[in-house]
Length: 380
Ligand code: GLY
Image (cartoon, rainbow, N blue to C red; front, top):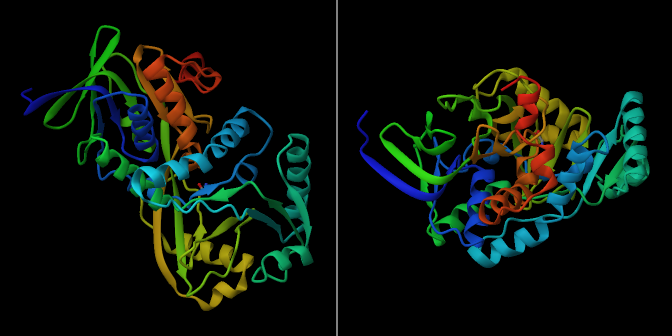
């Protein structure tokens, strides 16, 4: 095969979503000179863009374990992350610390709330129980049918689309090359090492290669091994536009959530569907989201849907992130499988992966979430 060009970088990052962009930034801050990002479409336009930007370890995790711990630690980096990005790029990512409510409407919901309250208290997470009256005092537009709720003061949100703009801007200002419409089909291997990657027309060489390709990870081929299995799980979303902000906090129920933005948009999410690489919205999905929104707040019934979209969450076999070197090639690192929490986990993932590449720093999370766990299970 004849390639138009052969290019060399210190680190090649495949995938220009929030994970790839955050890793690139962190590598640059640690002194890595030549970083190239290869993106199959447009950087920051897939699941990171489709996301709702919730930074919600209390609402998004189910028990006190290492996953909850990594989520909580990544959340704790966000204040600094947002402040640095404003300083570096002038872009405010709208980190919003108003907290999250988790509502109960049925007896089943109340059981879930009690269970969640108990394990989170035991785990030392910040959680408060609110009566129906207290809930409506906190959010007057919540449905009068609410029975009770939990308040998570440390579950925040960020405007993920602004975060992506900020990360892209950081790359532009710091000579990190982003090549778009540059899908990688194959890694280039020499013995035990991955030396680069091939796009349709070009060959890119690098000392280290990072796979941050989310739902598309398993589509990349290498000669003698397979990358971990990651499959797309569709999330459909809708939004409404209001002239002024109606809700102060992110509001969950067991059936979905609403996310109020500073500019008056109200996002409602999300479906969880195993339908392959199909990013269409469906009538049934949109209806379900409308019902979820109405259950939380009948006030939404007066509003027209202003936008609808879908994204593909990257789900590994066990639903947990995959972080670290591939067993077959120590200079090939993966950072993928972030499933429902890519925006939340971006700052800590970036520190862990960049620390390993730039300074051979170890992290317990590189062991716990290593791709080796699937080899042991015979799944890669
Ligand atoms: N983190 C919310 C979702 O994936 O729908």
